[in-house]
Length: 236
Ligand code: NAD
Ligand code: ZN
Image (cartoon, rainbow, N blue to C red):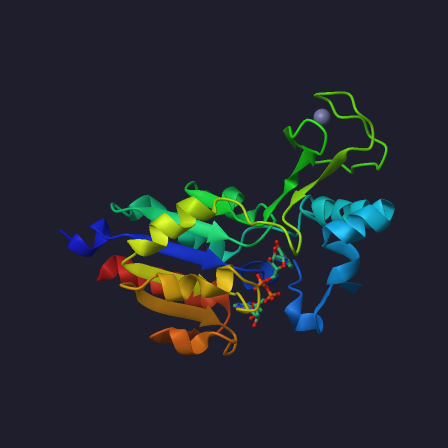
């Protein structure tokens, strides 16, 4: 019996794991996200100032998920396979707002920065599954109020979701694996420090701001390095 399979694992993913599925990261484009400045599309102030632009930006991101060329890649699939084989606690935390982990079959998955395929009503707080474009004047299907719907995305300056559950899992993690994240965005960039007893592994195409906090570095594209690591862990 492989006793290590009963240990606890926490995985953190960022935009880099979806890059090979055709979804662009943003730090790799000089801090621009699909040619937009973060301050213009990913803050509550931006939404207040220009809801039209912000809705258009997220409508484009949401509709990209329907592009038949955008599919989970070997890295997303390997993480789902690892979860199914794992006997201990397994938690996948993603900063991504795309739906590729779920489509690959991951189940114990937390979207700490929200989800493109959900919207939220500022009036009644209802969260609604939404895969179409969202118009600024749309009425809330729950409370009927107009123009109160926003993407269910955690913008800069807002509180990430599920933090209690994530901190609890990090505290008892035996493995912490960070994949395709630049280590620029907190609190996610600080998770490695909280996984105090874990074997800490970073996968990225290059060194990051937080590489020094990891014991092992796998440098290469996620679609190659993640399946390799999963095979290694399951074979140990
Ligand atoms: P980031 O854009 O800041 O950094 C991406 C990281 O991935 C970089 O360190 C880069 O070197 C690495 N990388 C690029 N290609 C890779 C590959 N093929 N294999 C392995 N690593 C690769 O991303 P972040 O740290 O996740 O922060 C971005 C924020 O922007 C997140 O909060 C997220 O919500 C949002 N965002 C999400 C998506 C998405 O959902 N797919 C896309 C862009 C931005
Ligand atoms: Zn409502």
